[in-house]
Image 1: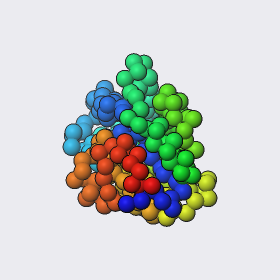
Image 2 (image 1 turned 90 degrees about the vertical axis):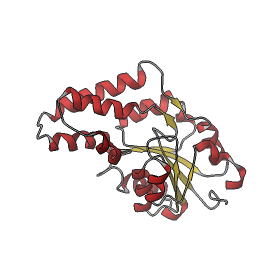
Image 3 (image 1 turned 45 degrees about the horizontal axis):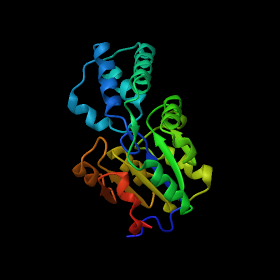
Length: 222
């Protein structure tokens, strides 16, 4: 199955796909809601995997009729930066840079997208050492709407003048798969290294699923 043949761009999600962030973002989101006494159920968070983080907070603020948006967002931003960057516990997924290099050796552009802000994304990209191995990136605060809307993919597609049927989307959440489908990418690959289960990714109509991005180094895909 030569999935990368006749492909010009692969777009990877970041946290949970190419970055092992230990589920920190969902912990910080929940801690933020608890700090401001905003009610939520644990089950509700499954739906928000992979979605713009500020949109998640705004959703629960609306449900709780809470008006001090700035305080909530500032609290989240402060604590996600502290959690991500103060103790070096996040790290690249195994073989992330090796896969980036192999794709580029095959004349395939490597891009990243994320539900984090540009500020957080830049720090993650630089701290993981990805800046030398990718061709571009886009964040959900740079487009009209984040996942599952197709706008982040469309921005990269237009930037590099690449057609949708020459693009693969790879991610660990239902939102990633739906984003790829909504952007008409040729293939949507689910990985089991992050938030959502095999069952949920299959239900979202992932083209196929791998345990991790390391599996995609196999020569059979080229």
